[in-house]
Image 1: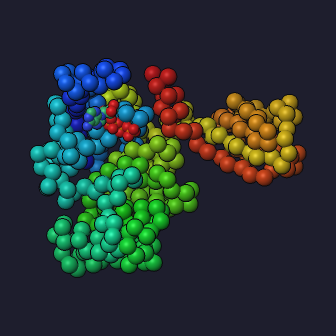
Image 2 (image 1 turned 120 degrees about the vertical axis):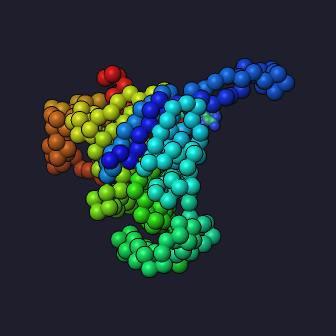
Image 3 (image 1 turned 45 degrees about the horizontal axis):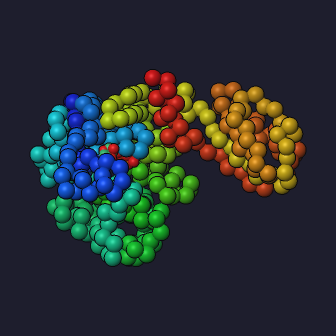
Length: 328
Ligand SMILES: Nc1ncnc2c1ncn2[C@@H]1O[C@H](COP(=O)(O)OP(=O)(O)OP(=O)(O)O)[C@@H](O)[C@H]1O
């Protein structure tokens, strides 16, 4: 069964044309000229029930606009969509009972209230039966380990604590489809990991469909089975995450801070390392995981140099998308 289907979904915004400089601003104010800006161009989407899909693209590609249309916030200029059987912009209220949304940059919890009160309000808004609500709430509190924060006003919670509450709140009414927009933005590695585990667990145990946008390659790799890439408003790629992993996510960036300065010639030469850059005591290099392991690269340094600090990172999403774009 399909959770989401869109055909020819398009959104054009009417924007004021503005020439450069103060004169341009004045002219556009006195005699405005309008032009059309296509934010989303004719995209088709099919997401099956229980699927976990990453919806990626560089800044301004049209991700948020698409999500806004799929959740009924925006009316498309043309095209059709059904989300869990509803046309979002015509049946927004009905749809709200069946989907959950989490926007990493925008809290949906009442800022001055403790999460427990927000849960209570959500339970009532979604007209949940009292015993079902109580059982569901207790289950989420336990799984998301929210006990210590339940009675603290949201404004006093750390970002990681708040995000756990946000996701639990979005799951309270048992949505079939969860829209996650940058759910791990600004979180540290440990909290990110925990949040990904919790979402994965919900997908497994309740078959919750996940539609995620993120600039974090880790979210995509660990949470999703399929990747859709949007660029300049149009769909550019639809592939299993396994293929992306093999072809694009097969790189890691290692940054090592050494105890003393080194010159590039002194560095160990390991096959599979590329783009090595040395700046004072800091060495930055990329590893092609198909040719060498992180361990293998690090072992070239350990013992030969004193190491003060070390980070291993995924390539930034912009780079991954650039790579995919280059390939096409
Ligand atoms: N209300 C609006 N009026 C005019 N143009 C808009 C409006 N909302 C979005 N746009 C434009 O539509 C394009 C797509 O924007 P959108 O916010 O969907 O991109 P995005 O992929 O979500 O980007 P980001 O990763 O930066 O959040 C951009 O060029 C943006 O400037």
